[in-house]
Length: 115
Image 1 (spheres, rainbow, N blue to C red):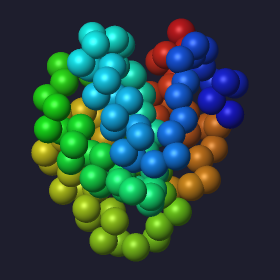
Image 2: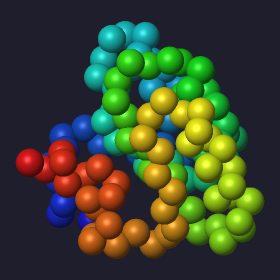
Image 3: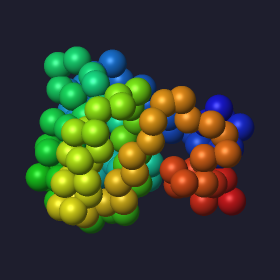
């Protein structure tokens, strides 16, 4: 679906939040490009999405990042937790329920990248 709404040559997939954060940290430390858009599942092994966000916020990156929290959770506490993070997160932070449809791509920061 992502390939149909945007052109991006650098897509990386990680199996858990720690792998993703370590890769982001390595990019930052070696002055490589930081992702414009991050899709972040709330429920991941080793480090969940909330832990990833805590660590990301502590980096104090200067780049503009759009972070899309993706979940299948219907627990209102997850939405409240997202709201609390949104108040202290210096990046654009969206909250979307799975599945995500192509029509929602503009809300996730993808359509801007396609132009």
